[in-house]
Image (cartoon, rainbow, N blue to C red):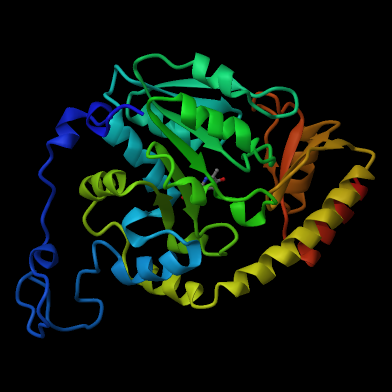
Length: 344
Ligand SMILES: *Cc1c(COP(=O)(O)O)cnc(C)c1O
């Protein structure tokens, strides 16, 4: 990896971050807060939330096995996807490399930030070769995006190939593990201490059943997290979100129950799909959704919409012609989908 200072945009490296009232006060026990121009009434909502979400990170430290100083929390993974562009990529000059097809937000954020996006097509098994990703890089490549399990294909990327990219790249490698709780594959979290150029993204939106609260996580070196913290909006995670996330984290085993049920439902759905005459293939999945190759994805999609059932039509995505992406629902929802498809 290049020294961090060479990778970070000079204006960001030299940035003097906003210093909030609560940042400046620390230490002694206090009970009169006349420092932040807050209204003293309407507790607890009158007070600004902790800008560094310390209590929440303490709980995540235990659940994720990652020290608080290696955790960034954001307004969904969306924020953790946008920030590295703003931190590392000089608009109009730098570029990023990503597997293709993958999650759409990496490209949207590249476009917003005027950063060139270089997609590298997966092979016909939806797998990638490290050498091909590395070959797409040049001296202006700052980030490589790898999503594993990948959206929309559903499969986990090969761990050795991911490690080869991390070891072979001078810049930052971001591995998006939004679906890792459903996967057979282990999280890369344990590799963090070994690789200062690794950033791992996780979220409360999927297995944790909390998409509405908007809480995304990035795990990375302490140095990298410090830069994220200085660029983020000061109060990027609101108090209600912090409280609800802590509520969920109190009982982390609750999530295992969801995951177990959803994986059982997934096998049931996948099996039923393979028996549908209108389904030609179901692709290997390690997530709470799967990609199915259909006879006519558009027609089937429209037909389902007419019945009030919405799946994701991926037919216009590269390598996903005639594919529908199906999220695993409750048994009742899955049965309704299947019975509609059987009548198509
Ligand atoms: C759903 C999803 C996310 C979650 O995004 P949030 O902003 O945290 O809700 C992140 N990455 C991928 C690949 C996803 O599919």
